[in-house]
Image (cartoon, rainbow, N blue to C red; front, top):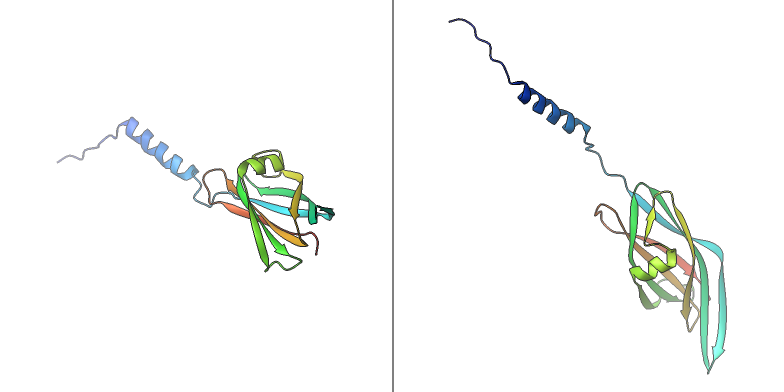
Length: 156
């Protein structure tokens, strides 16, 4: 029997080469992440007023949100925990922060890698207090939500 050669159709070779090239160009490593850090810019301005026998303490904290890494994140909510005096273990109240409030606070509903945003955030209570401020954000692409926290010591 004489040897035979078999020709592979050119189209099949091109499809196979394209599949291999596409597989090689995909990154199998982890996706880049975006981290948001909240920092306090001192001083914290505290004012106390008395009206009708009650005391109101306002605490105006200058905050900065700095995003590092790649991508964009959307503010999705938060919580402010109020604690007595300077003791963060003595939480006496909390308040939810909506995405709309965070959009108003930071001037945008999103933050992008390399960006820094500033705001003055007011906390109010009727006794000497501090606050633990938590802002939640979700990185684009459906990644797991994350939390940026900052303690704010107001009065006490």
